[in-house]
Amino acid sequence: MSIMSKKNYILYGTLGCHLCDDAEQLLVQAQLVLPITWRTVDIALEQNLMTKYSASIPVLINEEGQSLHWPFSLLDISQLQTK
Image: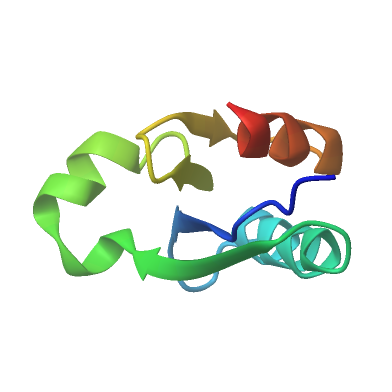
């Protein structure tokens, strides 16, 4: 049996975004069953991120640059984990 190493993710969102809050809660649940960590990046602090993600937040991106756009599920995160 192989042990999966922790995967790191970035969750792009912004303050006051209820969908971003929902995505964070899903990530908290995912941590209970998957070896993941994440950090939240507020797109409002950088113009290039606002341009890129403002119409699609929350967006979850793994270390390889693969992304999930909301709505995503625990299963989606799990499948992104194994890619």
